[in-house]
Structures are given as C-alpha cells and as structure tokens.
Image (cartoon, rainbow, N blue to C red):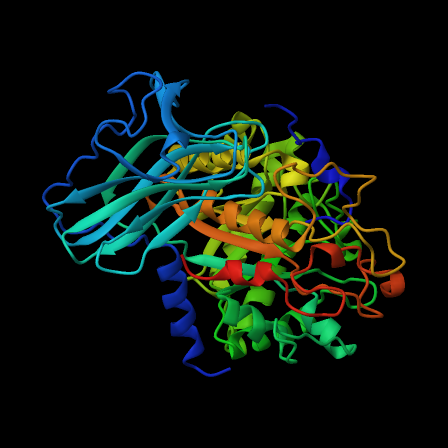
Length: 533
C-alpha cells in the first residue's frame, strides 16, 4: 500500500515467545500452502443441463432443474457464458426465486460447486448454495461486477448423506437481474486458508492510547476482536531507518510478539526503504544511498537475515516473507529499477538468500500491484524466474477503486496461478465504509479524488460486501491455489501521533474511513467477513 495513490492509478481499468513457536510457525506455513485433498470417490454424478442449453430460450424451470418462489422470474435466455443460453432471474416486480437440482447417489466426501454468475443487483440477496447434504448449508453470494462481466464463484461442503442440492437463489427488487451458467459439481474442497489483516500501525496506536470495541460495545484488544471475527493471519511491515521510528524493527518485534500471543502467524513485509514503498516510490534507505551495487547486495542480504533472525530469536518466526513491497517497477531505486533487470534480480536474490539463511522454512512472497494487463504481470514474474529469483507465493495488491472491477482480479489471479503453478493471494485490499473524515488529514480515498465501484456503496454494508466478494474471487482460483487475502490496516483509526508521515506523525492517518472500526472505534460488519469459508 502507498500513501501516494498515484502509485496505483495508472493500472485502473474503466471498461464494461517459547521454543514451541518455531515448529508451530512452520506447521502453519505448510498448512497455508496446502490445499484440502479431493474426496475419495470413483466418480461424481453429473449435473443435469449444467449450461441451460437443453431447452432453448424462454423456458421456466429448465430440464433437470426445479423452481420455487416466484417461478415466473426464472427462465432461460440467450447470451450464455460459454454456450448459447443462460439461466436468468428477473421480474418487473420484487421477487424471490430458487432454481435447484438435487444430485443423488454421491459417495460421501468433500464436493465443490462452481457457477459462472453476473448481476446488477446491489441491494438484493443472491447466492449459490449447497443444501441438504447432511451438514450445514454452505452459501457464496453473487458479487456485483458493475462492468457486467461474468465471474466464477465456488462453494464446497462435506456430503455425509449421499445426496446434495444445488441452489441458485435470488431475492431482488423489481427489474434487478442475476444470471447463472455453466454449473459444475466436482470432488474436492475449496477453502480459503488466509483471512488476514495488515495491522502494522496497531502497536504504535495502542501505545499512544488507542482503544477498540467489539460490535457489542465492549472494549477489547483489536487483535482479539478481529480473531473472534475469523482473522487468522497478520501482515507486518518494517522499514530500515524511519525518521521517527515508525515501522522500525523494534516496533515490528513488539507487534510480532503481540500477534503470536493471539496465535496468529506472520507475513513479514520487507520494504527495503526508510518510508513507504509502492509502484511509484521505492527510495533507497539514506544509509545505503551512496553504496555501489555490490555493497547494496550485501546490505540487502545482511538486513534481511538480521530482521528475520531477530524474529526467530524471540520465538516469532515469520511463516511468509515478502521481499519488497509492490515492486512492479523494482526497488531500491535507481539501482534496482526494472529498467535494469540484472541488477534488480541480483538484489532480489540476496533478499531471498538472507531470509532463508535466517529461517529456511519460511515461504517467499513476491508482491506486485494488480493490473488489467495480465501479460504485464506474467512478464514480470517470468523475468524474475529467468534471472534465478526463487519464490513460493505470488502476492497481488487489489483495491477495487484503483485497479478495476473484480473480473480484473480474477483474470490476474487465475492467469498467474495457471502459468506458474504457485499459490496466489491478495496481499492488500480495502474499501471505504464512509467518505467522511475523522481528522484534519485528507483521506486517501475521498469523493473528490476517487470514483468508487457502483456495486459497492461507501457504507458499512458495502465495505463488508467488497471484502466478502474479494475473498470469493480468491476462493475460486482453480486447483486450490487461492490462498486468501489480507485487509490493509483494519485497525488504523484516528489516534493522535499515529499519523502516516514518518517526518510528521501528527499528520493524521488518512485511512480511518477504510478501517474496520468506526469513528467511535467500534467494530464494523466487515470484521465478520474474516470468518472461515
């Protein structure tokens, strides 16, 4: 993330403490990168008429499917996702309709439902679900893609009753529509392992008197509130020598102890800068600014090894480590710019080597900001590999209002996972719950500098829905390669002295309208979206 939004806007699209801690961290890291195995089964019963091609257009309750509720609102029409036809839910008056199909003679085990969807309904309740499977009903809501593009979503369940019902459900206002198509039902599960938060500003804020309250108004530690909501991972950034100590190693170590105290593994975010690093800003630390390339390589290796080693020494080893932050254009400018890939690769290799020398089990993340040009991202990662830069996980920043709608994210994640066979995750995301301001600092996202996604209002409900749907896109990455997502700075509420500018901490933070706590420091509904799925 950047405190300079211009670093992202160029990619926006406008189209339609114990010795037990170390083995625990290693186990968590391994778990986070391992998909749930497919159910043991010899065959999966086929979905009847999965693409709604059997009957042509204008048919209610198409072959193989039944309907309940406002049955006149459910029909086939032309314009399918892959074929000629699709299922549509629409009516000129408010309606509720469920199009469903029960699959029988299933070998018990995990199964995943996949559906291609699109909708313009910003105020309804539209979802796919698996019910009557012998366990609790599982539901995934249909995202609103305001560009009108198809999205693929999934849900999974453990079948214990040898049968399961697929539900395509819409409860909508008059004239709101939702399309469903190309249904799949396959053996295996599709969990989201990581539902994390970047809480780098939290420790400092608490030291300055910051307080947090759960949705009932009871004061609690912010990490406890977030963990109770389902958050299961923490991301922490570190700068080399910031002016006022903001995001320095001492703060990192204290924050890591706090996270481990709540049983939360850590993704370490190495910026290799004294301040914010992002696609438009990658300043070399002042103490390294006169170094030769060879000296810089040594600095990167030694610094990476030191920071990770210090985390290990205090019993809080990082399960994952980012070598650089949003490094689309490189890092440690000018030496490490992408205009000179051999030099950038040399620095990245030294960063990876330093991390691994301190803690070999950790997973290496290379982190870029999202782009509506998948080929641009592929070119970056392919070049890194060609220069011998090793990594385990692909991390992408995705902010709906800067990077484009959810189909951009789905294209990026699915394409990268398919090309490289590596786990992918959203390393940063956030959305405003209001466009109001709680301090004198202009917010990063305001009504005058940002056009929001029409599908998600700047409201508590809109913020929650946006995170819910980002996680749904990650969950749908094929072959279990979607790890999860980190919400950026959910705890960065207004606390005097905890500002964004390391040269002026009294500046205000500019992020309080995207935090997971309101202006009274009370948890917002978005916290519940960290729940396991």
